[in-house]
Length: 408
Length: 141
Image: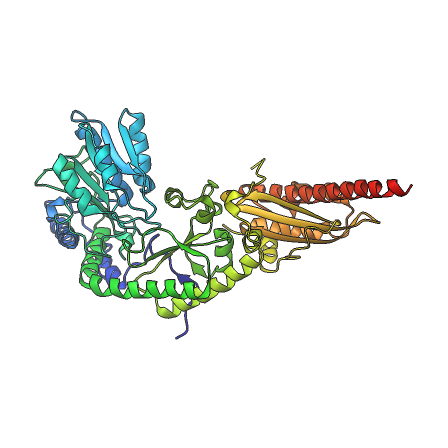
């Protein structure tokens, strides 16, 4: 089968909308355009009915009650609402929040802002495999701790945190537990009751739904979580998130959730095999590859590899008909390599050499073959022109070398 | 990020990739940058001691496309220049030739540093050999 270029292998960044989702959404742009908050005519009723159906579809995907689903504009807003909402609502109870250094910027930067407002935040380090230590978590808890927020699966390295264990610890201590579950929901089983999660952020566009819509799961029983809204207005979404509902987006979100729930088992198994095949093929064709993060506790469709002695951006340049991303500094304006990879302690040089592969619903074996072969050729070429590879071949220990870096 | 056609050309067809013997008294080697910063350049010049003209230049670079292009271009410019002319190459010349955006200016700075380091190494070797040559000459005199 001929493959179509460019190849998309960056499903952690976003996913295409499933055609079945688009089909479900379309009537809600034109004929069924009502405002779900219009209580006195059929246009509003129709829209509200569609929203409630979608809310149930999303709730079913995570084992929640539909009333516990607060619709937002996406996971960044959900993260902000969870953290700022808890911080304000429970200020009397305490001012301490626990999170981890490898969290998404929507979590880290929200916590940083709260620090300016007098809150105290503990950023847990991660172990070499990318997971937090439960002992360190327990040790960080104080009588002032009001919230633990730890992501379900990491967006760069796909590493899955011990969510159920964290949930149990939080429950035992009477502390609220929020998880940014964007990368995991729809890909692997995720049940808010089994995991003892009090709040969870979800995004539609990471699971073959449209951009601009997401949800925050907010537990209603044992305990009933209360949040101060961050957006004030007409009191939509039980007062937690005002603003006219994005009906077509929500309908698409619901349909996407339903498809994920139905196909999850077969899809994740297929992608796991494809991912393992990619990994194996690269290892057979190249030496000195380093996998970033745990392979055991990892999303089935994620692979994050450092190609030693080769810089990530130059690697991406050589495979410009393949969409992947790199932890290299040069791909960002900050000139700092990925903070997630740095947190693993592998060294900045390996962070600069990393590529993240994200497989998804339309990835094929032919695409994986193409990507692996092309990468092999480019890595080989770039290593031939890498002074680091040459030095390493000569037996020089790069870690003990003194580098001339003045002026940089 | 969009690359200029010249950067892409140097990346796809790098000029003068390779290494020359480090111990050759007529070869100067510059190794600048650091792996943690995401850029390391090795640049070598081979100088004709009679004329002071750079006969050959080679590079190897670990870094982004702009870093590779900057060092590739530097080797092109170095060949045929005298050591003094080589010292006059400025990073801004490289920026202009490759149309580097502001975030990539550090790549050109590194290339200029590599040129200077290679020539400094060559000059050091030359003064060492002439000094030892002078020493060898003395006893017979």
